[in-house]
Length: 255
Image (cartoon, rainbow, N blue to C red; front, side, top):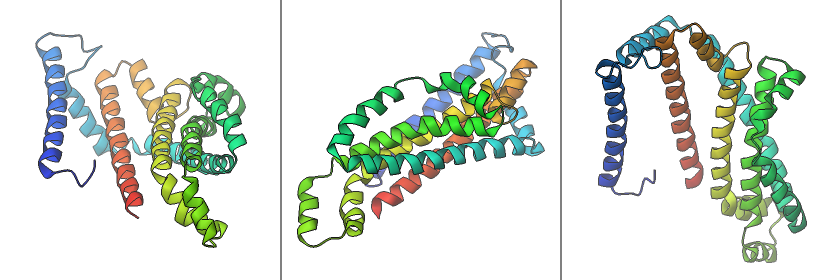
């Protein structure tokens, strides 16, 4: 959220978000205690809370969390390195932009997670297949936004910098990057989100460990309260990661 917004608006926005979450919890509680929806479909939120406390206290999540975060961090790092490098290289040529931008857009429209069985056949059920899939899916929004960001820099700015004797390195750091940064950061945020979702999602389909794998195992054993506790735990982890990304993005914008 923009830090220059009036304090009253920020407080009101947080209040609406809090009331929305409280409303969901209230509906959940009523559904299980008043409407008597089967606990197989929807466990009591109090039971889920107790299971969540037990999961945190026991520390049983540590191994799965480490695997999931390692897979995600590796996938996102690869996606950023390749996406920014390839995107910047393509953005330097109008011809390459016309060739590759629609091509990448068309590929990005394909649900790449459908190729998970192929990734598993190549890299197995372990982390490498999840890393490869996350990096592939995260690559496309990053490369597309990098192409768009650097390719849309006003030519007047680059011409003025060249006329003043700016070197290639000075041109990149003082002209191109500041102008393209907002669009590139938007691509990084999209890549961050889809890479994380693809890693966790692929763990629920074909994996030997990880938070997604743990959730599926609990569902298969009909431990619904504990399964929901792990879902809440994953949502909390994703929220924390998004807050951290937002802070890094805000810092980068102000530099």
